[in-house]
Image (cartoon, rainbow, N blue to C red; front, side, top):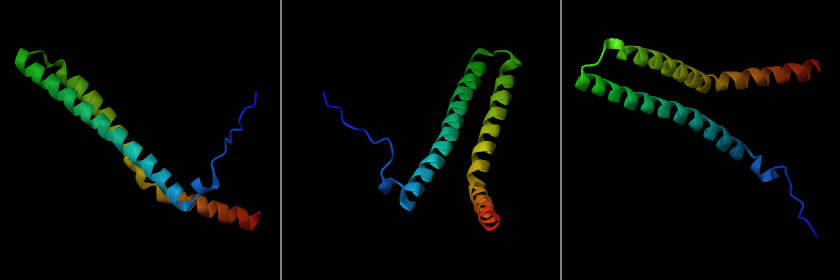
Length: 105
């Protein structure tokens, strides 16, 4: 029985500047979409809870989940958008470190 050899390494064509840009863009979109989905679910669930509260005249404890989840959403947004906006800074810092290591070997 003959088995085919599977090359586990990516072809060189996938390691082009354009391919790296596409990969970076996909990672950035994934981060943004994760946050946007979190925000949408937060909004829909809390609108539902507010509606339920208004219809049933429920207790005042409704605001605790809203504030707690809102804090979590704010932290998620801060992490995502800080990460997206500091990518250039990290890239420049890495490039400087690479230069220093080359110079001082």
